[in-house]
Amino acid sequence: MRKLTLAAMAFALVACDKSKPELEKTLVQVQQISAEKDSLLKDVMATSQFIAEVNTEIAKVRTRNASRPTNAAPGETEGNLSPAQQRAALMTKVKEITARINDAEARLASSRKRVSELTGANSDMTKQLAQYDSTISSFKTIIDSQKAEIASLTDQVTNLNGQVTQLKTDNVQLVSDKTSLTSERDRLTTERNTVYYVIGTKEDLLKRHLIQQTGGTLGLGKVQVAARELNPADFTSIDKTKTAEIPLPKADKPYRIVTRQDLTALETVPEKGRIMGAVKIKNPDLFWSASKYLIIIEQ
Image 1: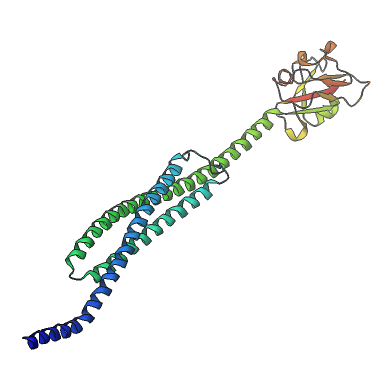
Image 2 (image 1 turned 180 degrees about the vertical axis):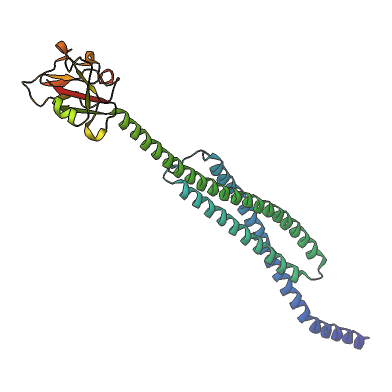
């Protein structure tokens, strides 16, 4: 009996010696699984916090994008950033969020794979891994949703860039049109305000075909009137809004206006139509209303 007991003990010791490596291997595996699970849990918690941060960032980006006036001109600024700088910062933020999401997704997948490999056929570990898988799946759903949100934001930024490009094109066209309109307005204003005058003796003006004589009998009593066809090149041009006085060449000689200007628009209505010294205009619009050509003849 004693021999049998000793034999059993010897057999047990031999069995223990043989199973010791297996026990040590199992212990190491359990420790590794525990460490990986802890790592996975930390990743899950970190990802949870990260997802909350990303959602906050997405909200900020969307709010910033939505709050920008759609009718803002290309040169307008918000704070210290120009619209171009704002769009660049927005795209940078979107790319940063995308990179962080991809990184979190990759870390979760890697950690889950390591735990799965170490768990093997351990049923308890497999159950715990299933719980982690469920959590990871939830995070992946959130991450996929965030990716869709980011894609939408990217499209918005791209569309915004297109709108700004169109605004710039439209603005250039508007500036060009405005310049053309301004030039045309200035041309018309100059044309409307430009008037012409000439001063000379009867003989000189007749010779230059600026006046002609009409009326009278037997060569007597003829009067001088403006010629039918007048050329601006034969006159001195002035701006009627800037020239209120036209000096006469000879201060001691009387002059008479041949053309159809309204003499009541002068500072002093000339007696018998005779003007001395200078033609002083009080009301230019009235004075030049009948004709933009003024012919003054020396008497």
